[in-house]
Length: 357
Image (tube, rainbow, N blue to C red; front, top):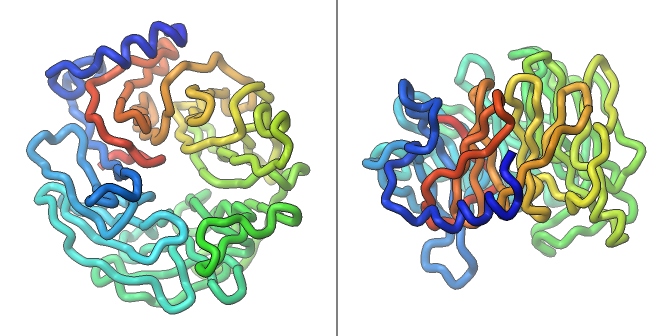
């Protein structure tokens, strides 16, 4: 495991003209293609872009605003969801650098950053907000045309990421519990009474199977990943008003066999899980504010943390992972050695999510 100082020093030295993935010993036979949105501050003339990593010939795609979740499609296409409270959904061709189609959110609806495909690849399911009631909904769209087909309740406030527990039959939705409305932007309106939950729905009926809650209602349920053994890892974002509680807040919950429980606590992670992925039976969570990749066995036991400056997105193929950073860095994670290997810098501010194309 790299010590924090060693790793940050290596990150500083990455402005070298090395070929992408040259530092990754596992990529010799197959180069992964990764997609991520990048962003800059309000002064930038380009508010958001979509980049493909691992294909040097693919140009950046200029987006209508800051992108967040990405859903890869066949033939070099992907659907990009705008950041909460989002006004647009875009289908892009990342190989050609083209925006193929953009649709605006329905009246009084806002996109909440994530989407998933049905197993047949024909329908896109998005997390959205009802701007009138503040309740969460799941929007249904044709993948081919992006025509809106309808919506069903998310059974909570602030739905964010969603994942299949059983392909095409059981869907889990992370209802973060934080109320935000168009007229007040990203201001959090209900922190004193927030009630995050993990909602489990039957599909395609949308019927609520059950909702699951943590004892501490200030822990917002945000991002989801499945381990090889089927356990569901849930990255948390703490909304406590206590600085001490925020600093040492739990960052991972695990859902298994109908029970939602916190993983072993790790102090000092600053209460913000930007992304989560599973490599085998290990959950990796990017503790962005703590400059750390936190990790746990899927049973809940904490593993040694790994230092990385402002880690953001994590993409996993089940055997290894790649991690982006707000500083523009990339790193490869080896499950065999539980180490990070720095990769060449792109000098971009990566968004919280990174996906395999």
